[in-house]
Image 1 (cartoon, helix red, strand yellow):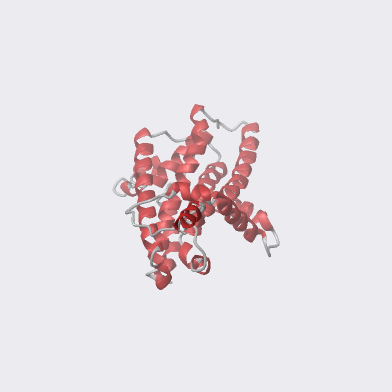
Image 2 (cartoon, one colour):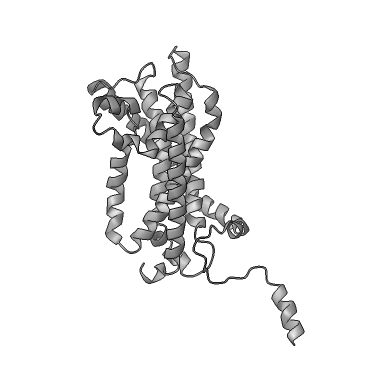
Length: 290
């Protein structure tokens, strides 16, 4: 009897045990559930197109209209100079990168509330859900980036003084960095929302305010020149360095700050690991508060 029980125990593929570790990424377990990850990615993509008239065209309308609005208000009326780069292209580049961050942040900030029904019925690594949102938003980013390249080709053919450089090959790493930062911050916020429901009402306002502090519609050097006493708000914002570096890589405008990128990398790692830590602690008891 004991021999049969031992043979049966060896046949189990997975063994679910309480998580007692202070910190765990569960990368091995996430890899085992990679099919579920792809399923969630497919779900996130399909639900966007379902019951919509324009479908993926919404991905194009938002950045285009936002870029036009920023060009009229900040460049034409406020007189903000973008150097040799056409203002519309300058704004479109910043908005395209910024939209990927906000999509990751907004999508992951309500992970527990939006998936309480699934979490309460079946076990799987919970981090798969916010991770799938970050991956699925790459499709949205890809569509908007393609539009950016189309306008880039148009302005370049018209003789605009724009150009890519050797650092452009590292642009995908910059997007990965932006996604990890959005993922970590989103997991942190989702953990807070489970206990403080009204906190979700501040996310939209906070993201909008953060956009103005992230140099999306102006060069970083401008805020330091015009508002030297408040320039530190942008200088210590890691997102501003990502936006500035992205425009430097794609358009050849601005400057590449090694210190700024190192600072951004450090902040991103801290936010991500802190977000995973709090996310793992929250998943043990969130079902009692959601």
